[in-house]
Image (cartoon, rainbow, N blue to C red):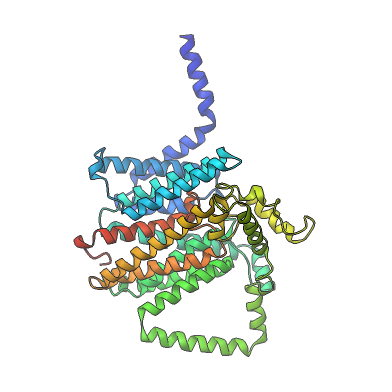
Amino acid sequence: MYYYALLLSLGIIFLLPFVSYLFAGLTILLLFALIKAEWRFPILIAAFLLVTSDISEELRLAVNFGGYFILFVFFFRKYGFEIKRYPVIPTNILYLVFFTILSMLISGFLSEDRILTFTYLLKQFLFFVLIYFFYAAMCNYKNIKDYIFALIMTGVVLGSFIIYYFLTSDISVYIFELTGYVSEGGYVNNVAAAGGLFIVSISLNFILIFSDSENMIKFKPLLITILIIQILSLILTNSRAALLGTFISLIWISIRLRSRVMLKIGVLLTIGIIVFVLTNQNLINTFENYIRAERIFNNPRTNLWTISWSIIDDYPFFGVGPGMFKNYMFTYLPISLNSWSMKDIYFIYEYASVGHAHNFFLFRFTELGIPGLLTGIYLLFIFFKLSFKTMKTYALIDRNTYLFIVGVIGCGLGLIGRSVFESTGLLSYGWITRDLPFWLLLAIVVYLNNNKNSFSKMFT
């Protein structure tokens, strides 16, 4: 009897620190069970992207555990343990996953902190499992539409918070009036985190505006209103990398649309803006302040890139290990410890968790060596190869699905443009809030490519 009491006491003591997580997780599961079936996965995607650790570490962990559990239950209720019934993954995707894990395993084994590096390896593996669960949940074309709207509305919700925080902050409004820009992220502390989501959200919303399906035409005023909210909030973040990525994406989409009306409007608007700006010195000054022109070539990234190349020179084959970049920052520091620029480097060292190199390719190269760089390039190759193949197929089947793939390619191009200045958003060791949008798009493209023979219209 005493032994049982002792074991129970020890169990309670062990679980006590996790009670809040368990309670929050159970609450999430209960709420999820009460939600209509067709809303569950869009809300789950929104929770993964919007409930960040900036709000609460405990709530974020609860969302992660609860979300994985929900997807796990859904998967095995639908497919059971019969492996033959499981959705097939294309061979090239399997190769990508295998070599990504292998490169992290080798680099982690050779690193100075194996526990840390293998923690990132586990996170990356679990992220791949998460994407597979979402892929397996794509029962039909309606599910894909729900995923798309979830990504769009997530950008709208975050954008609304950014605008609200800006309007209700006297300091932000004052800084904007004084300098011509602010860096407002709403409840998200790092504005760069919102950037990748806005590229995807704005691009997908933009393409839906040009859909000729009955429902999309009916909701066109709403979609335009949403687009305005998204663009305004993106401007308020002042994330130059996200602005560049969005611009690249929208240019690609506009070219593929081949709309004469849009082309004329775009040309006239561009000419008008150029003439108006060039004849107004105040506007020129405002624009220069907004893009921080004096810091384009003099910012922390240039020092971080210098550090990256120094690390690559010494560790070219397998890198320094997943997440180990920050441990080598001061070893290869190209500036004085007492310099003004050192404050920015120290801030990044102190608060950034992954992607310190601020360039996707340098990030992969420095931490995982040549295999890491090659897997990053291979990821982009697969994404565009499948996307262009699917786009050509649906050009002959359904215009609206074809337009959607055009938007997906635009998202990919935009995220690559952003990746020149930000490491995260593509393959960041399983960072869900950063990488989920891109991988959901890749999963959708794979599904569309694999199920073109059983096609049914997505946007009706």
